[in-house]
Every structure is written in structure tokens, then in C-alpha cells.
Image 1 (cartoon, rainbow, N blue to C red):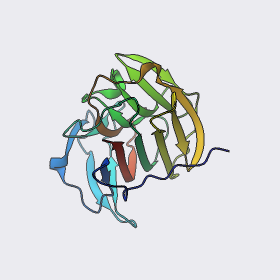
Image 2 (image 1 turned 90 degrees about the vertical axis):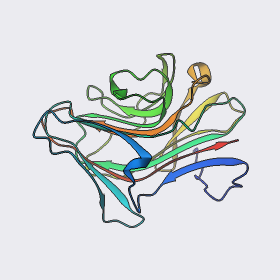
Image 3 (image 1 turned 30 degrees about the vertical axis):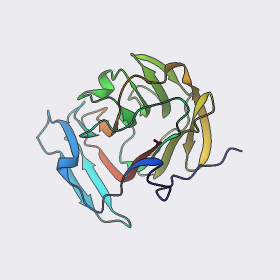
Image 4 (image 1 turned 120 degrees about the vertical axis):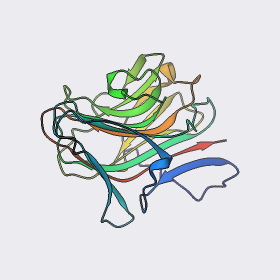
Length: 217
């Protein structure tokens, strides 16, 4: 059994670049937020109660309404030989829509066709969550690594150890597959990103406990 490789903020800050959001606070200036509100215009993004802090994202209630968050800077880049890690803990109130979280280029409609990134994705038309590695719109993906259940917490992580020929996926600290480096986006800067899009005319509540990435300099 492959075990979880712990995200570690205590590593030498001169050796690793780290961006970790625990949502004790939510500073809108730190994120570029793209929201589609075709329904009543009632989408909200607010801090919620919970140990360590939480961000509660509620979409508007029309089909395809969405909320996409990206760091205002593209601060990461896949580099062969340099360790790279992403981690995210979250839950969804509904599982009939789209979900993406990871590192990808700045894009206001990522589910519509982001071209470069390494990210977890669940499409409304698919049964479960996959890890995607994409360069110039060419994708390598895992098989389904988890079939998401509503109102259930998940911790997902991908990890590249700098020497392997693959990027490994983890769900709740257990290895869950991998993707080859064939389509690793090594020519683009990437932003820490997450978001959801409705799959029906129902609001989605997306609760973010934490999200972060770490890269060897």
C-alpha cells in the first residue's frame, strides 16, 4: 500500500517555495474570483466556523453557475528534477456538478477547457474524481481515484518527487494512482486554483478547509 506523503510547511524556506491557505481569514485581494450568477445573483464567499478556519463558497442556483478562485500570481511551475506537491481538503454539498482544484494557468473558465496544469477534476458527466496532467490541451489522466459523496470531507494530494517518471495521486492519505510526465506543463507558470460549477439548477456549497502547494526551488 502506498502511503500519504505529508505536506510539510516546516521545510527549509530557502529550499522550498510554499503557498498554503488555511482560511483563518479571507483576503479578496489575494485571489482572482470569477463568478457566473445566471440565477438570482445570490452567490457568496464567506468564512465559516471550523477548527483551523474554513471558506464557504455558495454558488447561485442556475445550471452552470460557478465560482472559480485563482491566486493573483502564477507562482508555480513544473520543473523536471524539482519536487512539487499540492494538497486540498474540502467537501461538496452536491456531486452532480463540476469540480477542479490544483495548479493551472490563469483561466476564467477552466472547466470549459484550461490548456495547461496539474489538477484534480470531476466533471458533471463523469462518475468520479481524476488527476489530470495537461500541456497545450493534451491530457494524461488517472482512472477514477474516488467517487465523491455529498457532505463528505476529502483530502486530495498530488506529489512529484523530482526523480520519478510520474506524478502520484493520494486520497485521504492513501495512494490512488498516478499520471506519467508525458503532458507535464513544463513551459507555463501555474496558479493555485480551485472552484465548482453547478450541474443542475441547484446551488452548491463548497467548503474549503485548506489548500496549498509547495515546490523545490
